Amino acid sequence: MTAKLFSELNLSPELLKAIDRLGYEKATPIQAETIPLLLDGRDVIGQSQTGSGKTAAFAIPLIERTDPQQGVVQAIILCPTRELAVQVAEDVFKLAVFKQGLHCVPIYGGQSYDRQLRALRQGAQIVIGTPGRVLDHLSRGTLRLDQVRMAVLDEADKMLDMGFREDIEEILRAVPSTRQFICFSATFSKPIQELIRTFGRDPQNVRIEHKMLTVPTVEQTYYEIHGRSKTEVLTRLIDFLDLKLAIIFCNTKRMVDDLADELVARGYLADRLHGDMSQAQRDRVMQKFRTGNLEFLVATDVAARGLDVENVEVVFNYDLPWDEEDYVHRIGRTGRVGRSGRAISFAAGREIYKLQSIERYARTKILRRMPPSLEQIEEKRTSVFFERIRSALLQDGFQAEQDIVDRLLEQGFLSTDIACAAIQELRKDDNRRVEVSPRPPSAEAAEEPFGGRRRDGKGDRRSRPRPSRPKRPHRNRG
Ligand code: ADP
Ligand code: MG
Image (cartoon, rainbow, N blue to C red; front, side, top):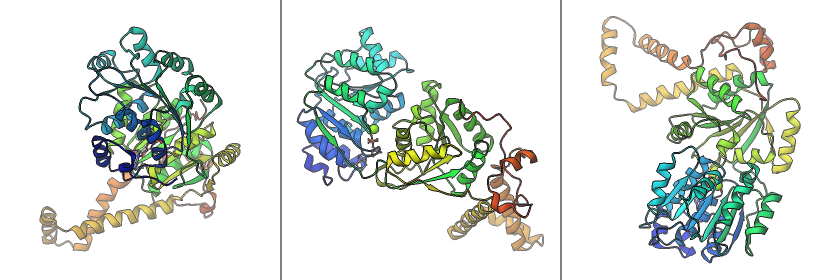
């Protein structure tokens, strides 16, 4: 199955224009296979790896088959989390932008009913929601599904894992039985197959096989590190790799809170995302992350499920996930649609066995790496700094600075000394972000994971005060 051009898929000019504006060149395999079936009105069960474009695969035919003249709900999309509902709604909105009169509305818990009510009353035809809130609206009579012709379950297996099974069934029963049933997921479990048997009508299975379950462009490595040293190694890697956009996964909300606090204390642009936060908070964080005003998103699996943010350089498994499947979903947050990305996992002790079972499950290889030493980081930072100065020199145009330099020259300072002093001042700012309170020496020795480089007894501590984190009991498994 080779990918097709969207122009070969019998789409309306409005959709082709929207797709073109999104910059998609050709349909991904899951899109090429499912769009024609869905346009034909068939029930479809779709399975393909994360980041393969499943949203557009169902959103495009949904939009095509919706009548903008009719101000009633004609399609419903169920998603496991609020973030995902919002993201899918944004995708639908972008694809429907040239369809006059077509409206979609996300409805999810945490947002006021009023706003959602207004949107529903205005005659939205496509509703995207989480099962709980959709059911709320149904029972209040503020949402009617009796004209629905298409029902989509996105990330269906996850919704079932989260205990939405009864809600989903109730919602599907509120929809006319003649509706098209569409079920998408990266993976399929037994309960989901039962659901399909109950609600699907002669569904077409579309399964895009990949040799590996994981995204091939993602380089996967791990570091053998014990709990207490993880933050230290994490920040070293961030500095060493000169990262600007990364997601760091932890297994518990508590751990997410702790780590986000630590990173902020060390001067990194970090924030958190987990299920205990209010919707407004979560929206704010995601907005910051998408617009690059946040470099490091510390998150739990539930909150980050399905999130699609461009150019995430690295996904860290600060905690190794308990579930092999979650590993696949986590690392799918980087290397989206052909871009390269990295997945870096921390593991120690018995977790190494967990890694092996992930490797088996995902049919992949996770290579072991040694953390960079402080010397290597220092070298790296010097070279980053060197490049910064060099490119500034190449760009020229120092009118404002020239004045200062002239005055210093007049006072008899040498130009090289002036440059050195300026660089020194600059580097103070540069170093500030890793200089928090010094770590007590005893703890430092105990936490030293980088054995080999320290045999001289002095290590590389001379060059720079060692970054540290506040003392606090470790709560990795909460
Ligand atoms: P999935 O649901 O399969 O994990 P998404 O639907 O979230 O994947 O899509 C992942 C990314 O790929 C999104 O950024 C989306 O805009 C992009 N994308 C989708 N279809 C195409 C396409 N045909 N060409 C290029 N990029 C695409
Ligand atoms: Mg998806």
